[in-house]
Length: 265
Image (cartoon, rainbow, N blue to C red):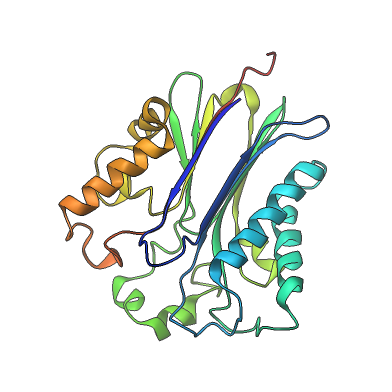
């Protein structure tokens, strides 16, 4: 297994709210990739005494540990347990019922010699590359279906946050795990995989510099830092690209890339 993880904050004045890890297989467990994109709330308006990076580190750590230690549990249940564990860590100090309680998008992948499992919740992206080079993007497009005029209103967006007919993120309710996009692919059909927060997937989705196959080629040839450098260069060159859906000049950007060895290796 070859893995490469890189992350850049959107601004040097704010902490990076993304979180990612890639772990190799160990005896009795498979390899894992975990990637989170923390949701930035309005300043001081989330009912929580903790920061979003605190939340993503707690949730990411729980996802990584549980994915490795409990290969018998499907990924949706892993996410549910991790959300519950994280909520329990600040239930006594914070208002977890607040609509903007700390939350994050989730990409979770786990593999062994037989299969590759995946889970995607909200607008981060998972790429699966087959041995012949074909790339499949696993997407949860519910946020993309929300009209721009609603997203421009915080109150209107809140009415759709973790609600039926809206979009879902990992916050304090373990039941949200059942809303994730999930699947399993035979291990022999996956040569490599990549996880991207929306700050990194801008290379495809915002700037249209290439398709997902091109994106994976950049990751393989230049590594995760190379893709992020390309994104930052494009952002600086065109501050108006993306229209109303580009909320920030620069966003936190994180990419994780993993090449899988042959199951017989």
